[in-house]
Length: 82
Image 1 (cartoon, helix red, strand yellow):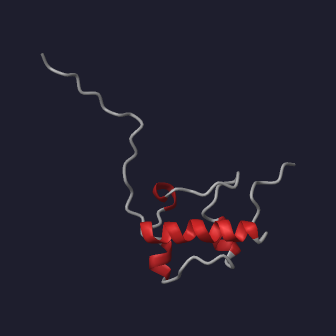
Image 2 (cartoon, rainbow, N blue to C red; image 1 turned 135 degrees about the vertical axis):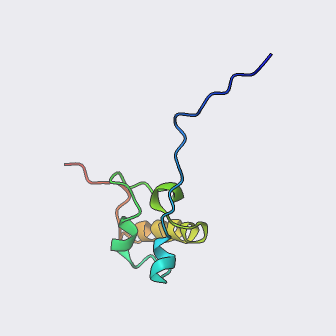
């Protein structure tokens, strides 16, 4: 008896984007509000590595920097409702 093999239709293909911070030779910091908002959704959530294209090392630093900037009110926690 053979098992049926199903293809996962939700599986994403990995894209080879270069890490933004590795290419620019920067480190994510909480004072860079414009750069940090680039890595959040319009609802205020932090993008994951697959969508943002950031390497593992910088993704951890990025999430800490976004959380610090939110705490200091440099960027908003959620989007403003109109």
